[in-house]
Length: 67
Image (cartoon, rainbow, N blue to C red):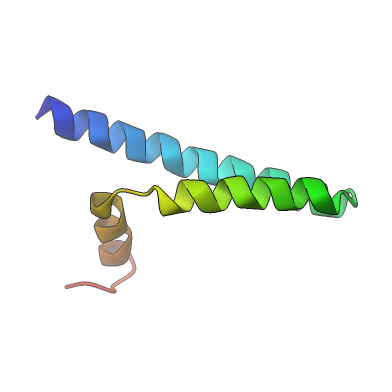
């Protein structure tokens, strides 16, 4: 049970980092800092790739992609 809670917390924190990185990338683009935006985008892709299978399942169920 404690492990599941820790996993959920890690998933929540990862989703927050992804959202933060997306905002930073958008801000960098708006400010004309293309290379900085690419760096944020690369970090965001790494975080997305590190999503747990359980998080992916939750996201797919929430969007109706799984029964």
